[in-house]
Image 1 (tube, rainbow, N blue to C red):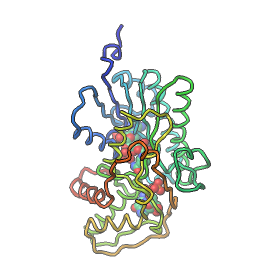
Image 2: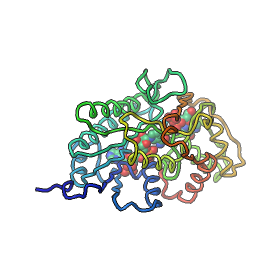
Image 3: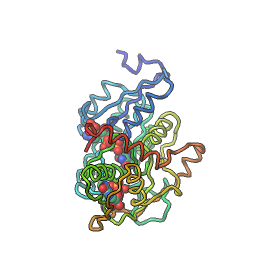
Image 4: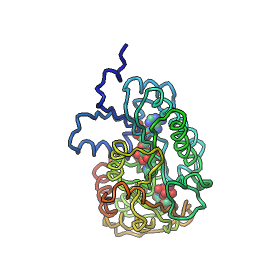
Length: 326
Ligand code: NAP
Ligand code: GDP
């Protein structure tokens, strides 16, 4: 009996995107919608409503239903510093199960290419900076997120094992801190930019002070979700290595948490008091990553300036306050 794969023309690509309802997935949906259509590509955008990827059986049924030729694998249990500190075990076990299920089924269903997502917060805590793609496994990650970090590192290990044993083309990309519309603006669970956007919004509305957690001095490289989406699409179409590639703005674009907060204050035109709550954790002080490998492939790629990206994020949050995750 002919399978869906047999019936398909050789050039047709069915690109299944897991985690497509999240920050990065929504940006990929938007970029695909804006692109000139490519008739040979069919995208399938999935959320946890389509399947709980922690479940082996639900994941298998998903592959059986859609028969993807390509997978952009974004789905993960994701959270900011404070969520990671609280739920290290859950971040480890859920992500390990999700990633194992995705790659195992991608292998069984003959998927041509999988691009999965790592993060620069999985690099060793004690290291030299900037970090590059060769340094992921060179020492323990920061204790605040060791569950998430080890689960993500195992994706790279699995990619290499699938290549060695079965010649699969499963690879990964390594973004720095992402921000943009459709982020998780929940204060306890989310990352720093959505957290600060939500807090300035509330402070302005209620005429209360705006609290930045920690000293404000840690350094981060922030990538706008639309830029990351474009890079993901490039990776699924063009990137042929199994080894990971860092997706980051340049080292010169690294800023402090306080500088990011100042840009958010400016975007809101907030005039009230700004207070650093130094009783809260700073987490990793820096995780500076280099983008030399990316620049070899895409020397002319233009990143959205952070001021512009933050303004767009703030405007989106204000306009979509009722539906935003918070
Ligand atoms: P997000 O906004 O929290 O979205 C997470 C996505 O995963 C959602 O679509 C969610 O579906 C889905 N998901 C979660 N658990 C699932 C499960 N058990 N089964 C099926 N789907 C599940 O996260 P994001 O920021 O877009 O992150 C996307 C990827 O980028 C992740 O792999 C993350 O590790 C990586 N990353 C993120 C950052 C960052 O700063 N945000 C930085 C580096 C790397 P529902 O909407 O239905 O819940
Ligand atoms: P990380 O980059 O993986 O550490 O995760 P986050 O995106 O959560 O950023 C954490 C950094 O931002 C730490 O230095 C925090 O002290 C600082 N920070 C300041 N205010 C906030 C906030 O409201 N939410 C979060 N998540 N972090 C904050």
